[in-house]
Length: 109
Image (tube, rainbow, N blue to C red; front, top):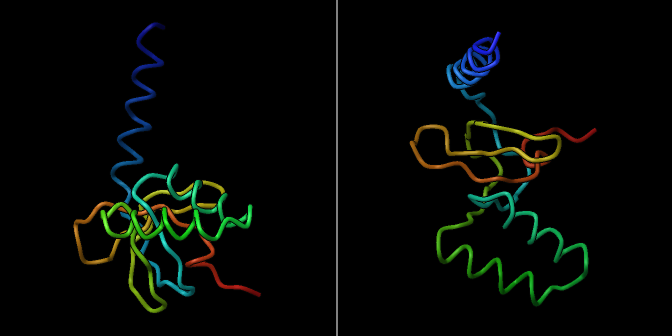
């Protein structure tokens, strides 16, 4: 019984890793960052109306490579997701993914 939980956990990780990333097309211009925490911090600054803080953090994050802009029409792969964010990487690269709102790739009604 002690071995059942680790074996099930290992199987779950193996299944998650073996699934190919979903191919998507960016529909709305968005930025994304390697860490979800930076993306969250940027969106919180927007929601708080702190345009100066948002601009400074975004410019610094873009310059350092922590964040990037996604343009409509770019082909990406969805590597991971939460309820509201997806980690996107350019389709034909081995680059690390960037956390961005799923609205970047979801069609609006």
